[in-house]
Image (cartoon, rainbow, N blue to C red; front, side, top):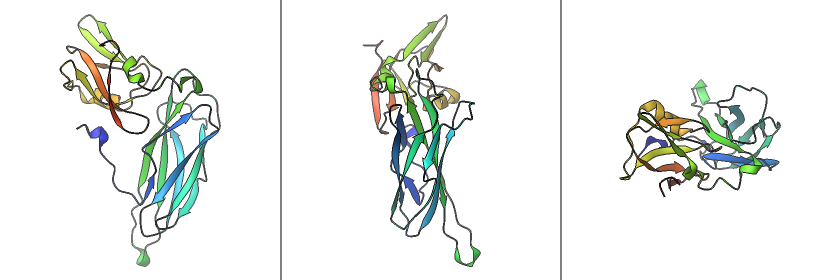
Length: 216
């Protein structure tokens, strides 16, 4: 199984999902932090832009600082504060959760874990077309080359690309890394293979298989 689906190091504070989808017609989305430890922890949440060079604030989390009692929960909201994102493709951000551990008696050191999950902004006009959009990727044929191209406006998390025998296609590491966050317009080399399907994570973090429309 691809390491794409592997879990993260256990933290005292955890989020209620592994990814967030912010649909463009929403005023805000809600998220929950769970304290799985037997001690009270502080927490801080904020958002970073992953790939775009635009540093203008896009989303804020409120409250951004909080305390969570042992075994307790804290709800926060993510709100859009800018409309500069493109409306013909998704945009992606990191949602960060930083633990603030309680002080150790005697001045001992505490481990503070930061959790990062993806937040995908989906323009309102693209919401209805997301289900199964992986099928709409295409294979580009060039002299002596073949490329799997994300010709959609959606961002995919792809673990494996499968050939006509339903066998994973071997790729160089840089292409495998690219597939983990396969952006609109990006492509990976599949020369010498007939691409039938992909395995990818859906909005809920579940692994599904998608046969390309060009194969059917």
